[in-house]
Image (cartoon, rainbow over all chains, first blue to last red; front, side, top):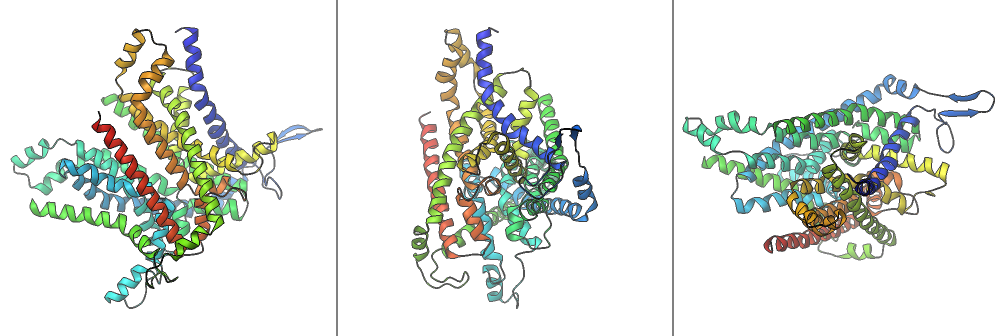
Length: 298
Length: 267
């Protein structure tokens, strides 16, 4: 490769590379650094990690206390498990609603498919905040759902739905449903239908054929959709904050409270690092393995 | 078989109802004369009128629009460069790190990105004296950092499906790499650039969590204003505001859809 071309490549790679190092990698390292420092009253509300004391020389002051605090206080473990649980339930509900929808679209007449799919993706383009907000008016005690149920005579007293975990699950399913349907559709649409014909020719009932042929073949789509729903749901803050109640424990809410309400930046940073290690790292490793496997089978 | 089909389409119809009913109800109640959410007090557009006189909302909307356009443009440029690097440069020092840095913001919880960006700005302000406080600049930097990954993914898939022989032909005819990129590659991947730009625009104008960290008293984008209003409860003004947002998005999608349709028809 000529020196000139090498320079050209360098100039192409430099802007995004430099941007990501300065505004992504370094901030992550700063979060890690602050998670190891001690809190103080003042601005910024943490002590420097490296002490430039004149007589004693440079002293590294590493404080693992923030992490000890995370493990010591039950709140954090409960919040982390609570996030996993609510995200898991939401993912399952998305799958139960999204699978039949994706299946129906994939088997619809060819001319309709594009429009039907667009209808699923459309809400994603309208504001996320507004879509969550719309549920407040529906779910609250004097809201539309309770009004309808009272009017129908199904209930005699309004139900408390808003500010419960049920409301959080509804909000998350609503917000993330398109993320489940799109990869499932992509998978189901590609499926070789002659396999089902073969099953039918051999005397297999449609439902049995579904269980024995379609479902196993759609596992990659199920996994892709579930990851797309589960990952953002675990770290979700807006939905539990607006729809959840005081007993909705989610890790995103805890981080927010540590940072904005308690102004304890070191503990907030430690929560963030714990989240990265326990959530983001496994997902990235998983995706890396999937990617490698896909390349190997190609 | 027939019965199964019916069941399937009922499920699909229910899924659509679930997706659209809340938005439809919100739009209907934005025209409610009564301040109470569940009581229908007759048709009225007064909440829209009140909205037009709310300077705070108008300023915030203008700021959000400026941030979103700047963010989308910067993200598209940087994201396209990143996609070219990932697809075309097979081996270079630090490729794994680069790939990781592009992929990570996609799975990173927004709340961590927001926290990390703010801590960076605080540290920079302390050591370099820049950026002074939270402003439009800090919001744009934070938004570009997570949007550019999404643009990269969109452009990357188009770029890797592209027929390389066109570029090779141009090279054989003596065109320089830059000329090949501008004359051949760019026009071919332009639908992906448009899609990436729109995606980055939407991500930015919609963002609450990251903006909450990096915005300040002088620069409050629209979602933050809506968020602080929503926390106080449902009100017809927010319904009206939300309806306007939905309408604008609808128009934008209709225009974009028509453009792509025309492009497809023209080949």
